[in-house]
Image (cartoon, rainbow, N blue to C red):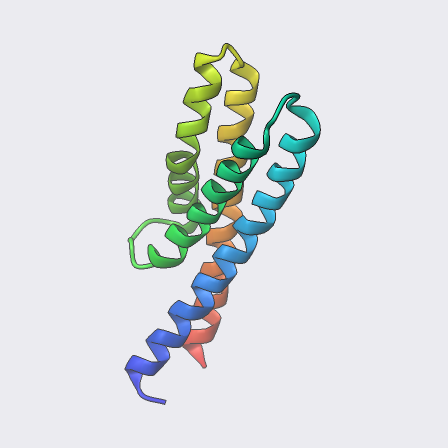
Length: 125
Protein backbone atom coordinates (compact mmCIF):
# COMPACT_ATOMS: atom_id res chain seq x y z
CA UNK A 1 0.00 0.00 0.00
CA UNK A 2 1.49 3.35 -1.01
CA UNK A 3 1.44 6.47 1.20
CA UNK A 4 -1.58 8.02 -0.51
CA UNK A 5 -3.69 4.89 -0.08
CA UNK A 6 -2.58 4.66 3.55
CA UNK A 7 -3.58 8.29 4.22
CA UNK A 8 -6.94 7.63 2.58
CA UNK A 9 -7.45 4.54 4.73
CA UNK A 10 -6.57 6.44 7.92
CA UNK A 11 -8.94 9.28 6.99
CA UNK A 12 -11.71 6.81 6.19
CA UNK A 13 -11.33 5.04 9.55
CA UNK A 14 -11.20 8.37 11.39
CA UNK A 15 -14.28 9.61 9.58
CA UNK A 16 -16.26 6.43 10.21
CA UNK A 17 -15.39 6.39 13.92
CA UNK A 18 -16.25 10.03 14.53
CA UNK A 19 -19.53 9.79 12.61
CA UNK A 20 -20.45 6.58 14.44
CA UNK A 21 -19.85 8.07 17.90
CA UNK A 22 -21.66 11.33 17.20
CA UNK A 23 -24.54 9.62 15.40
CA UNK A 24 -25.00 7.36 18.43
CA UNK A 25 -25.12 10.51 20.53
CA UNK A 26 -27.58 11.97 18.05
CA UNK A 27 -29.85 8.96 18.49
CA UNK A 28 -29.79 9.46 22.26
CA UNK A 29 -30.61 13.15 21.82
CA UNK A 30 -33.39 12.27 19.37
CA UNK A 31 -34.95 9.85 21.87
CA UNK A 32 -34.65 12.38 24.69
CA UNK A 33 -36.29 15.16 22.68
CA UNK A 34 -39.10 12.93 21.45
CA UNK A 35 -39.89 11.74 25.00
CA UNK A 36 -39.43 14.95 26.96
CA UNK A 37 -40.19 18.00 24.84
CA UNK A 38 -43.97 18.08 24.55
CA UNK A 39 -45.74 19.20 21.38
CA UNK A 40 -44.47 18.21 17.92
CA UNK A 41 -40.75 17.92 18.59
CA UNK A 42 -40.01 15.84 15.47
CA UNK A 43 -38.44 18.72 13.53
CA UNK A 44 -36.34 19.73 16.52
CA UNK A 45 -35.30 16.14 17.22
CA UNK A 46 -34.27 15.55 13.59
CA UNK A 47 -32.27 18.76 13.41
CA UNK A 48 -30.48 17.99 16.69
CA UNK A 49 -29.69 14.51 15.34
CA UNK A 50 -28.35 16.12 12.15
CA UNK A 51 -26.31 18.56 14.25
CA UNK A 52 -24.65 15.66 16.08
CA UNK A 53 -23.96 13.97 12.73
CA UNK A 54 -22.27 17.17 11.52
CA UNK A 55 -20.08 17.22 14.63
CA UNK A 56 -18.86 13.73 13.71
CA UNK A 57 -18.35 14.64 10.08
CA UNK A 58 -16.34 17.75 10.91
CA UNK A 59 -14.20 15.89 13.44
CA UNK A 60 -13.51 13.22 10.84
CA UNK A 61 -12.18 15.79 8.38
CA UNK A 62 -10.37 18.04 10.88
CA UNK A 63 -7.80 15.55 12.11
CA UNK A 64 -4.96 17.56 10.58
CA UNK A 65 -5.70 20.63 12.72
CA UNK A 66 -2.85 20.78 15.19
CA UNK A 67 -4.72 20.85 18.48
CA UNK A 68 -5.00 18.23 21.17
CA UNK A 69 -7.91 15.91 20.29
CA UNK A 70 -9.94 16.85 23.37
CA UNK A 71 -9.58 20.57 22.59
CA UNK A 72 -10.39 20.15 18.89
CA UNK A 73 -13.36 17.88 19.61
CA UNK A 74 -14.69 20.16 22.33
CA UNK A 75 -14.44 23.24 20.12
CA UNK A 76 -16.17 21.56 17.20
CA UNK A 77 -18.80 20.12 19.53
CA UNK A 78 -19.71 23.50 20.99
CA UNK A 79 -19.51 25.23 17.61
CA UNK A 80 -22.21 23.01 16.13
CA UNK A 81 -24.26 22.96 19.35
CA UNK A 82 -24.55 26.73 19.63
CA UNK A 83 -27.41 27.07 17.14
CA UNK A 84 -29.94 25.09 19.15
CA UNK A 85 -28.55 26.41 22.41
CA UNK A 86 -29.28 29.95 21.23
CA UNK A 87 -32.80 28.88 20.26
CA UNK A 88 -33.31 27.40 23.72
CA UNK A 89 -31.95 30.56 25.33
CA UNK A 90 -34.37 32.72 23.33
CA UNK A 91 -37.22 30.51 24.56
CA UNK A 92 -36.06 31.00 28.16
CA UNK A 93 -34.84 27.41 28.57
CA UNK A 94 -31.46 28.24 30.07
CA UNK A 95 -30.79 24.83 31.60
CA UNK A 96 -31.62 23.06 28.34
CA UNK A 97 -29.29 25.41 26.43
CA UNK A 98 -26.43 24.71 28.81
CA UNK A 99 -27.02 20.94 28.82
CA UNK A 100 -27.19 20.91 25.01
CA UNK A 101 -23.80 22.64 24.76
CA UNK A 102 -22.28 20.37 27.38
CA UNK A 103 -23.39 17.25 25.51
CA UNK A 104 -22.08 18.69 22.24
CA UNK A 105 -18.70 19.17 23.90
CA UNK A 106 -18.79 15.66 25.39
CA UNK A 107 -19.71 14.00 22.08
CA UNK A 108 -17.05 16.02 20.29
CA UNK A 109 -14.33 15.09 22.77
CA UNK A 110 -15.23 11.39 22.82
CA UNK A 111 -15.48 11.22 19.03
CA UNK A 112 -12.18 13.01 18.46
CA UNK A 113 -10.29 10.99 21.07
CA UNK A 114 -11.54 7.69 19.62
CA UNK A 115 -11.02 8.78 16.01
CA UNK A 116 -7.51 10.03 16.75
CA UNK A 117 -6.65 6.84 18.60
CA UNK A 118 -7.95 4.69 15.75
CA UNK A 119 -6.25 6.73 13.04
CA UNK A 120 -2.94 6.82 14.96
CA UNK A 121 -3.05 3.05 15.35
CA UNK A 122 -3.95 2.59 11.68
CA UNK A 123 -1.11 4.82 10.49
CA UNK A 124 1.46 2.77 12.41
CA UNK A 125 0.61 -0.42 10.51
